[in-house]
Image (tube, one colour):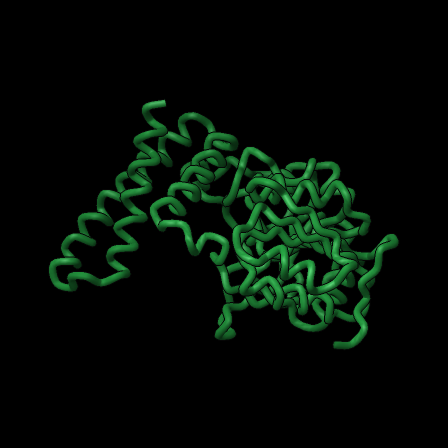
Length: 299
């Protein structure tokens, strides 16, 4: 491996990787980071009490990696914030452990951020392992059609970014207080981008920086019903935080009706295609949506 730009003193970039039971892919992620040439950087790995070999992977790779080993899973937002507090780069790069950074990406990100001082944070190209594009940039917030004027006046066209690969200015991370720790997992990226825009910053996109993303690896051992419960719970928290009571009631009603309708169509599909895993997984999803909103309505 060529000598990397890993450093301990005032780097251009602080890379933050939060790991939770991703040992199978974490080594590849770290190797891709250490192979980057150009901007100086430090690598901070926060492990959320993994029960696999994640800690061993980090310790066997490089002594220079700054490791925070938590005794419990404190959640994605809080773990990232732990790293922010000890970071020393002028930019911070949040990177999922189930990713591989393509060569030249750090240089492209730094160049873009330096050239666009009104951009507070930016995303990158994200590819599936087969080379197809993942949706990494969104131009509307979840539920926005129920209150289309809710976010008028915010700067720029990009609403939010997929949190697997985001670069942010150190000063912006400080101004915002990092990720909101109300979110244990999921929707924290939407919340961060919205708060940045509310503070007057643009959300950008670095087309020349690319990562490959396997996706969902930290939750692969978690039952799908529990994964959906977490996702929907985080969405509900986002809705309750940023929408009016009237808007949220409209969102809740619409999402419940849609879920009931989808369950009906899935039952019909199941009559003709019994045992199909896709039908079973979708059934779990829509039942989780109904349960989450009905529970919320009772609270």
